[in-house]
Image: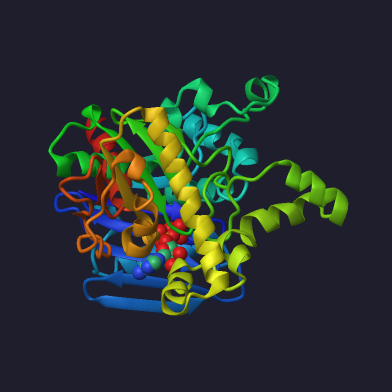
Length: 397
Ligand code: ADP
């Protein structure tokens, strides 16, 4: 059985075709700049990579072209070889709390959530409709970024705002990256040879977008992202936690409108805003390590400190921590960030093995035998997790 995993964004589509018997990625690609004057499609299989520069006026055009490449006998001959399609959907809210088959009712619920995720939902809905047209009858499954965090207790997901803003307007913490946090927690339990239900874990998903989750017995009990993926850690271009009064102050003092404030917080802040150099952790890290560059150091210090603070607070919330996991681009590849954070976790009895910590993109325990908390690097694989959940659901039908 082959599952196609789709991640439809506002101007791009990412796809992977995965063989569920072997978990092998048979093809992967991206369609970028949909709706622009020139689009780009990258398609990679075991035989090599093709790059096309064409106009993709709509998501439908882009997906059709990707499907043509998939069926070019590499890796399949016909679309009917695709048994199911798994969609990454950023937001499921309180209505869609589990991976589910996309029925007309589910599609409507996803669609109705557009005001809370205006950049993503329209693209997800388009993607689902295009697949309905191109692959009629093939089951489609939605896997939600927010689903894993629906186990958070009320005291963790409520903001201290007037309660009606929750009951009537659904303003609350939802959390994101759920598929990734869940995947690495499950994988950690396998690696430790213990049931996930017996473990308290803090998972640090550190990429361009970053979040940290407190997982008690396999269930998310708190996470750093909130109503949107803007809250929490310092990220590539996002500010993370902020006194909300900063926005009203800037609105009044500079006359900035809501769009400008949104832009500043989402696109001009974080590592980029603090350093005025780059949003890319690798660039900043190199500058810090090679020459102690003050601008890069300022940004990385805020980035690392925020991670430390969240781990500390989640340790308190959990009461006892068995393991800390680092994942995603930075978590998997930056011995510097891991060391900066872990060396300050003496209160938890964390001790890092510097040699083991020199690892990039591979599963490895990086704590010493004496460490009171195990620390692991575990590469995330959201596409495989989506494919596995899609496969399990379709098989059970
Ligand atoms: P997203 O999926 O949120 O776009 P990724 O998980 O791909 O992000 O992570 C991107 C980040 O990972 C970038 O900031 C990049 O600099 C960082 N990264 C990748 N490799 C390294 C490395 N070797 N050292 C430090 N950071 C790295």
